[in-house]
Image 1 (cartoon, one colour):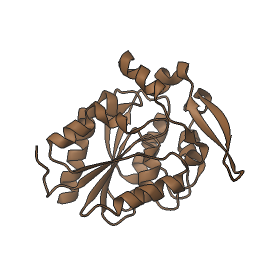
Image 2 (cartoon, rainbow, N blue to C red):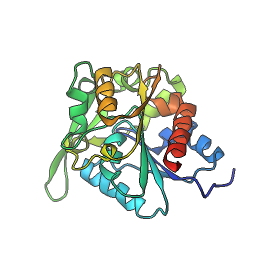
Image 3 (cartoon, rainbow, N blue to C red):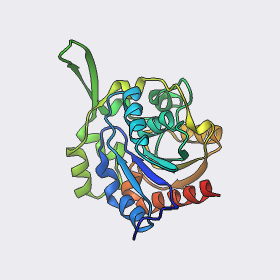
Length: 242
């Protein structure tokens, strides 16, 4: 279908230990079918401040209204960068919605039950200038349980093999702005997600006055329920246009 110039541009922001191929299991195709302009943001995963700066630079290239859509850690990035005036709505698919002064880690640890910290391997690195840091990858034998319990085996194998390291700064840096405080938000809540406790999802949605859609899904919503993600984006686009 041809692009519809009356529709907002949809910017898709993936999360930690993954890449933009997350959206190729049906989300991109569905948005193209519906005529949306699309930008797929390759999240650097180097730190919240850096990642949000990169997203802001992408937003600078877009004319007209934008809806930001996130998966997982991408929720922190769109919350931080979403104060751009052209951003009209925020869609969180299995994503944390941190508040001002909070980090992704705060969202993972506020309530008991999250299993992310116990499921990753940490590796230290040293940059040429001597700066040291640490990145995380999910342990291969825990990846399916943690992130993709309902994903087909062939797809799961690819997700494990292609996961990208996330710098711990991405998870620990605090937000200096929170776009959901002034813009409408939609939370697609996976009820079978061991990463973010259900109490946290509810807490975040309540304080943001978010529209909530519940799914019997693992953390990998864009892979398991792409048609729902597309439907919610359509809902958001209709709402911000009125």
